[in-house]
Image 1 (cartoon, helix red, strand yellow):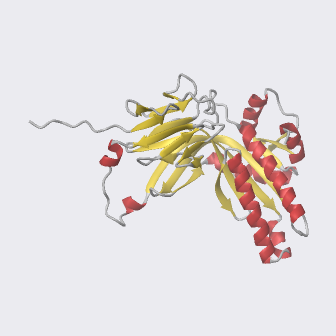
Image 2 (cartoon, rainbow, N blue to C red):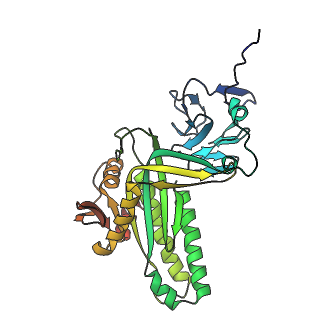
Image 3 (cartoon, one colour):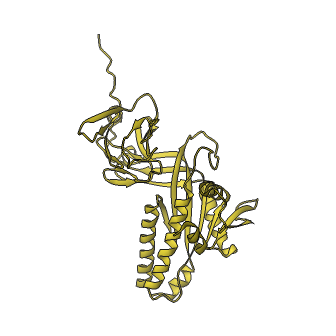
Length: 337
C-alpha cells in the first residue's frame, strides 16, 4: 500500500543573537507579519526593527513575496533594499534591521513545472495586486526651451544629474521611482496591500499613510534642483512642478526570476498627473489631492497653514476637484527642511 507524502511547507530560519536558529513554518495562513510587537506572526526582538516591519505573503499559489511595511530601517533581500513586493527564491537572505533570516521555499520549488527553455512561461511572471499608495509626479518646467538653449552635451549632463540625484532622494525617503517620463519623474510610496476584491476606497481608516515622507522627498528634490542651478551655467534656472495623490491602485509586475519590473495603474495615478498639471494654473510649486491632505492633517494633528485650497477643473474629470497648493519654500518651513 502506497503512503502519501506530505509536501514540505516553505519556512524561514531566524538567526538568533546567540547563534541558534528559530524555524517559522509558513503554513495555515496566507500572510505573516514580522516585527517587534508581540502580536506579529514572527516576533523579532530587535530594537532596530519597526513594530510592524514587513510582511510575508502568498500572492498566488506558488509565490511568496516580502513586502516592506514602511519600516524605518528598511527590508533587504540578499543585501539589496526592497521597496516593492519582492518575489522570494529558495535560499534568499532577508535582513530586517539587525535581524537575519533565510527563506526556504519547501514544496514551492518542487511543485513548480519545468517549462522548456525559451518558452513563454519560463520568461515571464505576471502579478497584479492592489495597494494603498501615494503617487508623486515631478515635472521640469520649460524643458523644451532648455533643449533649444543648451548644448546637447551640457543638457545631457544636467538632466542626467537631476534624474540620478532625484532618484536617490526618493529612495532615501522610502519611495521608489516607477518611471522616468521624458522630463518628469513618477514615484510611488507603498503604504499597505489591499484585498484584490475590495472596492477602490481612497484611504482605509485604520491605515495612516506617511504623506510627510513624500513631501520631505519633494522638498529635498527642489533643494537639489536649486543646487544644480548654481553648479551649471544655465541661461535660466530649472523650475519644477509637483503633484501628489493618495489612494488605491493596481500594482502590476512583469518579469522573470532575476528581474522584475512593475508599474502602478488606475485613477489614483492619473489624478496625480492631473494635479501636477494644475500647478501651472495655480502658479504653485506643489499641489496635493484631498486624500493626501487629509492624511497630512491626521499626521500633523492640525491643518497646515502653508496650503491654500481651490476647486479646480481637471482634464478628463466631470466634477471639480479640491486641490491644496503651496510654494515649496513654505512647505520647507513647515517640515523644517
